[in-house]
Length: 348
Ligand code: 13P
Ligand code: SF4
Image 1 (cartoon, rainbow, N blue to C red):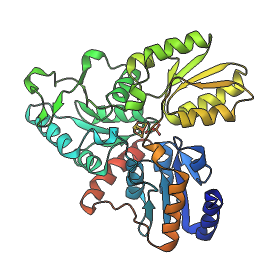
Image 2 (image 1 turned 120 degrees about the vertical axis):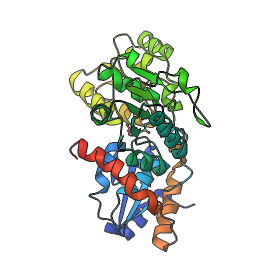
Image 3 (image 1 turned 90 degrees about the vertical axis):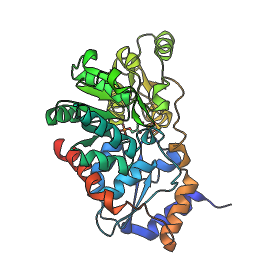
Image 4 (image 1 turned 180 degrees about the vertical axis):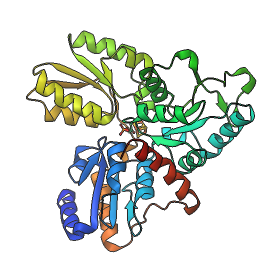
């Protein structure tokens, strides 16, 4: 039987500095062990520009590979070990529909600056770039929402209504200034009956993995681990976030684990996010504290990237048969603009 782990090590050695394997924190340990760079969406997007390797093999979902391809330099290729790994939330705001809604808002006298979560495809990012907007990640959503509110009278945040909602709460934007749009196949549904004049319009999308985490899960954790600290990802619903002790991006959750392990040894930290990451943190700090998942939360699409797929992708790179991610040249410039506006606004 083939020892895939060893084969990967051999292939990586063979490719040497021509290769960089990048991976998101939600990947399984069997994949993460081979990554040269791991990070959350923001860290990975930031690091692409510094990577000199000719081939970037990106262990993550489709939009992450596409964003890497957008930011990659000339002559660099980005490969996804499994192109079927697709973040379902990133498909909830198709570019054509988002464009239609932006036009309808402008026609109704309520133009909006689009602010798109990085979990979107390149076509959507291009529409956002074209309409003067930018991209954000969960790590910089607060800075970017503040930025977007300075660009115009109102902001259309898409596609994750919960990240938008939680970020608005952090900025002190009242509920009466927010509205979750009703959108159908033909754009806004009964536009006249919707309060489109509000400062923050939220697209009705969400991440099924995080939106499933519930108040009952939080109550159950508090009962099971008296005195525990509960932290969650801001893709969780606002009612869940508001009864937890803190919420933040993947990198924030990692820092929390590190901090609790160092400062509150013997305590219990409950983390509400993708379980691969929670399990890794639990193992890393097992001697200092107890870390448990808030509830079962596995992203089936992230899990489509396996060690075997990585091995096959590296083999294809060595043989010269790999199919890199191709970005439509017409979309490249406006989509890149939306991404670079984020990097500039955040001083990166
Ligand atoms: P981060 O931006 O925190 O990396 O999250 C990406 C993601 O897909 C969360 O579900
Ligand atoms: Fe997309 Fe949710 Fe999976 Fe993240 S956890 S990749 S947002 S489906």
